[in-house]
Image 1 (cartoon, rainbow, N blue to C red):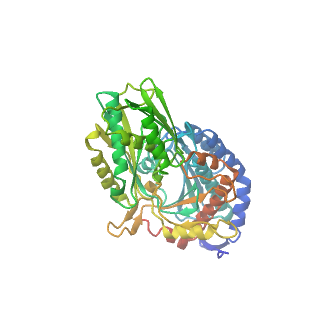
Image 2: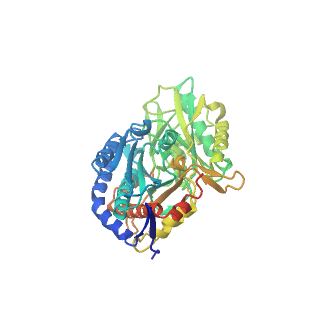
Image 3: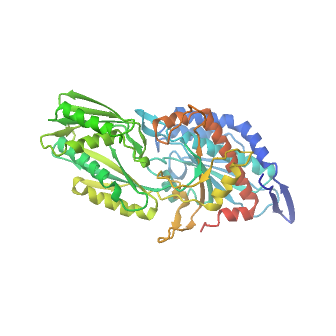
Length: 508
């Protein structure tokens, strides 16, 4: 058992002692009462996936619910973003005239495209939103029940996946009111870990003919594949994405086709057979046919997260192109669309330290060289660092019998990224990489939603199957537990100045 907390509040000239030993049980009771409704809202978002900056249904769902709750100040379309929102709850005990601390709670609710031919919650943001709402409501009720002074702010954060919505929220002042924030992210294993930095390069390939544009694009993707072992930085990756059809900048494409004019069908079949037989393209299937333009390779892969460097459908077509590229009699085409003369690709790049992102992008851009007619970059996702005091407090709490999640670990680093780093904004020593300070202390708890029973569904984020996992009752049950734990930490922080100062010691 964790030690009980005795809180002292200066109420006018009276010091009142509050025993919070019952807090955990109070939160259990309130979660049992509130979560069915919040779970239903999460399921509604799950059933109606919306892409970043277009999450209108998810936005309205949350706004309407919190507008119906007593004590919440609701701001829709907040911070100049149509699908952002801010929900504020303040409790000031009678006679308390001190400054109220504010704690932030971050919600996400955008879906992914390119999942089984459409949009889906294959990263579980339906659960992130559900967690945030639950944390906020439980913590607000505890503030009132225990008469603790404090302010809670739930910030609805659009477009985490592609265009760094939290960057815009930071610029527009959404996080200015607090120095401590909580969120939780579903995944395949439970941990509080570093999330790596990310940047995308967008390359425009043009040609005098369709075939020339396709050849340049595939030559560039071969180059990206070949330089993998030479990338600067720590733990760096670079993954190609073809900007055609239903694609996203951080999702491994499932379906890719490439045509070969002037090639023999049996030659393509032999190359593809050897590639698939090498074991380097697990779970990738291919069919080879002919149409009026030539031989067509249609590859179907497992999809997945760009940070995993999955050898999927696009990589199979790229390797087949590379095997035939010395034959000048062969030209290339995209089946069903042989008229365009521009082919854009994205290179999704990750590295451990934010300071290495610019050199990494410069290295890849230089390698692509004159193949690209133009190049641009998106907003950097800085690395997200672990706040030791915050991580330890969360893990120590959630492994207690009252919570029962005993498989949480702190670390290791992960190549996946998050724009929650724009809320944290860490500063590291350029030589030692020691964490020196943060603008805000952020807990980004990654929690397991794969059930540990034989035959249970399990996948990693952005894989199509993760969409199925994120809709299970077990996933919501785990979300409920994590939300209780985060709500408890918030109440402890608002009721204990020493604990709050420990959690925010790195904030400058």
